[in-house]
Length: 195
Image (cartoon, rainbow, N blue to C red; front, side, top):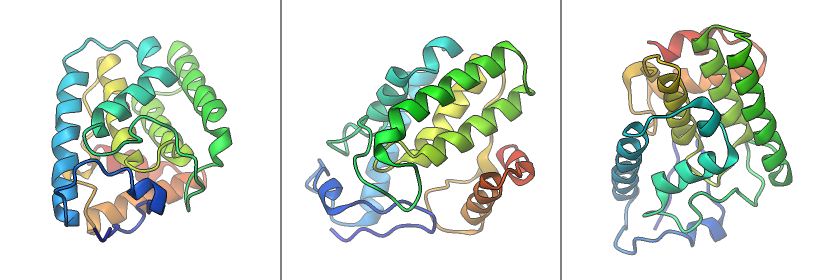
C-alpha cells in the first residue's frame, strides 16, 4: 500500500508500516475510514465513563486511549514510538517528558494557573509536541484534550469544526496555530480550538 500524508502529518517508517493489521486495505482512503471507525468506538468508550483529571492524566491512560483508538489498525497501538520523526522529541525522552506534562497539568488545574480552556489548549500543544506515538498523535491529543475538558465540566473544543486528517484550509490553520504555539504565541490556537 502506498501511504500519502497530509501536510504536517508524521510519515511512518517502513518498520511501522509493517504493523498494519487489516490486510484488506489497499488505499489511503480505506485506511482513513478504517481508522475513523476505530476512533469513533474509542470516543464512545471514553466519553461513556466518568473521567476525573487525576486518572485521565496518567501515562497508563494516555497509552490505553491510543490503544483503544488504533488497536484494530496498528500492531504498535498504545506503544511509544522508537524512531525519530520530523516532529517530536527523542524517543528515549518520551516517558519522562510525558510524565512532566501530565504532572504540570494537574498542578495547573489544582492551582488554577490558567483558565480551563487555556490549560486544555496548552496541554494539547505540548502533547502534540512530544509526539509519543508513531502515528495518530494529533487525533489522540485532541481526544485527550476533549476528555480533559469534559472531566472539568467544560464543553469539548470544536477544532475548527472540521475533520483535521485531510489536507485543506482548516488543517492548514490548525498546523499554523501549533507552529505559532511552538514559539510561545498561543493566540491563534486559542481562537482555533473554539472556532
